[in-house]
Length: 109
Image (cartoon, rainbow, N blue to C red; front, side, top):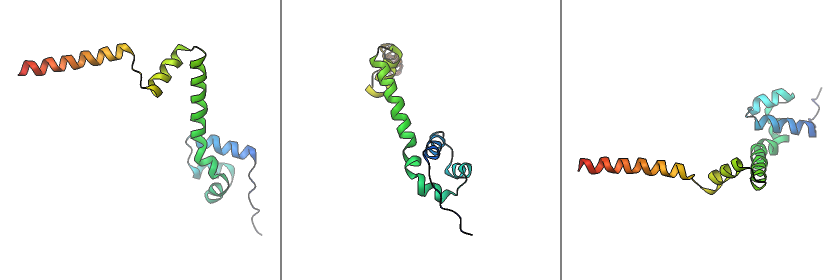
């Protein structure tokens, strides 16, 4: 008796996307939804390939929106991670370490 062809549903697509985002291996996702790994890849390749990037983009959009609304922590986070901004205290600490190393080198000369 032939095995019926798998029919993906929106609920299964969402489940595969969520499990993939959580870092669950394809082998385990397939077992969880009751299909083999080849069938999983055949019907859910988009969800497997893009799930993490889509979630990261969504979270990034939320951070950006919060920053625009005035959340100071989100502003700092966004500027540090996306804009290369270094808070003044961190710059001072780096300069202090650099100056200390330079003094040590000069003393040895």
